[in-house]
Each structure stands twice: as structure tokens, then as C-alpha cells.
Length: 458
Image (cartoon, rainbow, N blue to C red; front, top):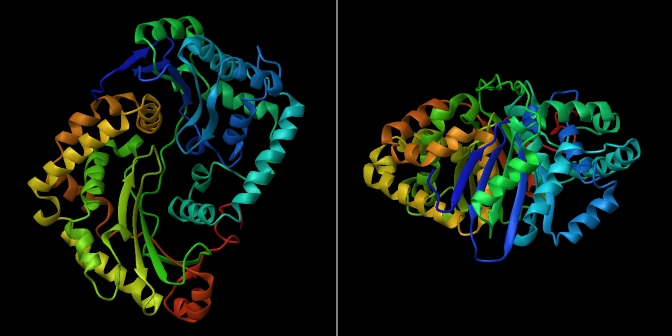
């Protein structure tokens, strides 16, 4: 990928450095990312990568505790600081005045490499994380996300749940966190991202000086996800969602997509499919919008996309329909239209013809320019792409996307969508569900709720 103002270096210890120059403001964004997170968890340590992230702000070899850490950030003039744990990455970041960038790089070096992990701080932080886990069990979005992980990744659902369980977090030990540090928090599994009013050669010099003696390891373990087709038939669910208006019925269809770790070549066709699908005047959206039974108000109420991830690639399609008849009838009709008409349509010239592909490639190019408007925005995107797919994937992405042909899109549809069984969810208000509960049950829909959505609730 060729991006103006972007520079890449690799240190002798394997640490990747990405620098993006943008002198529009005298600020520097500094972020460190580790290729870890939910996807590297086991059933014994699910939630501990997130707990580890919290402990990063509790003191290290230079800053004794949280108070000293916060004071150090204040002295650096830090704004917008945080950390997060996702499926494929754990990242830590802040923004500093550009003349404080050396101090910012040193701050994260101490935090990443020498966390104190004191027992008292760990005990306190466990309760913070436990409260987050408990809150998630009542969050509608988290409940649905948990159900998707549990059913679409049945062998190892904990690899799609950054929160983990209360029991695992409460039982966590310093030794367990140190094990995570020794295996995953190593330079050959990490990257530093610096962007803003900086000079790339100076940042490279500073990073070599500050991070160059960080010891690499022989390798970082990773196991691909074994199951690609977990269902022998479409799994149907209804979710009484308090966020849903009585005036609407929403459906979502979820299928396993390609994983960048094992199916990288398939992700390019998937990305092109996703881009074509989002065209507001495209034939896919027109097919659904013009169906009288579905009664979809506008093409903006129809969406579909594929998200590239290391081992949790997911295809998602969604439509919001007016509540003008039985929601069961509408849901069943949506699925019939999708499987019998939409999927075949996706393999025709009307969906993937050369002019449409050319237009989609322009859209992707424009999206790249939009993402590079700010150094921070682009580096966040790059961090996710690097963590989920690796350096070589990032470097070659643009050229490979420009070479995508209609046959690549068609191959993706045949391999991952046509005659494949996914998870179909109907989202309706609790009041509407009560009215049609018997009809949903007779049609073979199971109910999703907090009692059965999470993998750790037997």
C-alpha cells in the first residue's frame, strides 16, 4: 500500500515501526500495538488479556503507581489517552505535543516492557473488570455479540470474547499475567505507530535507541480456528431487544467468512463483494427494497459487509423492515428472497460486471484518501490491519484489490455464502415478541437472552 507521508521500519529485534508525517498541527500520536487479544486466549485465561491491559496503567519500573503514571502523562501534555483489547490486538495510545514525542515513546516503553503487576493493584483492578463483565450481561449489543461468538465458533468461543468470565478474572494471578507478557508482549509481536508533526528519520532513531534492546523471542504461538461451517442447517433465533421500536422488524444474517491467517487470498474478493453490496443504487439493495412484503423504507435500511480478522472473519447482512404484518412472515420471506434470488444475483454481471468493479475500485481508493486525512485516524486503521493480517498483507493490499475480477467475487460467494448455513436473528421489541412468541416457536426460532447467550453460561 502506497500512502503519502507513511514510512515503515523493522528493527533488528523484529519490532515494526510505522511513521506518518502530517504537520497540520503541532501534535504527535503515539501508539503501541501487540498482536494478541481474544483470539489468543484459552478457556483457562479468557479475560486476562483485558485485565492485563488495565494493569498497564498501574505503574512500572519508572513510574511507581497509577498516581505517578497519571502525573507523567500530565507532564507530557497528554490528551486522548487510553487502551483497548479487541479480537486481534491490544493497543495503548495517547497524543502529545510534538516536542514531547521522545517522552511519549519512553513512557510507553516503560509501560509495555516493565509493568509492576503488584498484588494489591491487581486485586483492585479485578473488581473493575468484574463490574464490566457484569454490565455486559445486561447490554443488548454485548448479548447479541456473545451469542454470535458462542454459536459461530463453537469449539473455542472464548477466542471471541475479550471480557472473559468473573471466575477466571477473580482467580487471576500475577504469574498468569507475567506469562502473557513473556509470550505476547515481545518486540517481534508488536508495532509502534507515530503520526503527526514528526520527522520519520528522527522517530526511527529514537525508537531504535529506546526500544532496540527489547529482547525478541523465537516465535509467538497461534492456532487457526478449526470450524468453518458449524451448522448443518440455518440456525434461527429471535432477540427481544428493548432498543427496537415497535414500528420496525430487523433481521440479521451471519455467516463465517475467510480468516486472514488461513484464507488471505479469499479476503480480496470478500472486500470487493462488500463494497459492491453497499452501493445504494445497486441491484442487491434494489431487490430487497422493491419487495412489497419486506416493506423496507429506503436502501439505507439495508446493509451488508465483511470484516477481515485474523481468525474470526464474519459476513453480516441486515435489513430493517416496517412492522406491517407478522414479523415471522417477514423474516421467513427475507430469507427466501436472499437465498433464492439475492445469492444468484450476486454472481451475475448486474452485480459484479466490469463497470461496477471499476466503480468499486474508485470507491476503495477514495476511502483510502479519506482515512489518511488525519495521521491518527489512518494509524488506528493500520494498527488493526497489521494486527489482523500482518505486514505483507498491508503492503500488498492496494495492488491486489486493483487486480480483483468478477470471478474472484463469484468464487467468494460460492465458497462462503451459496448453500452455506448461517445464524439468522430477528430483532423485535419485547412487546412485539410477546404478541408473536407462539408463532416464532412454531417456526423453529429459539430465543436469545442473557441466560443463554454467553459461552460460559451452561
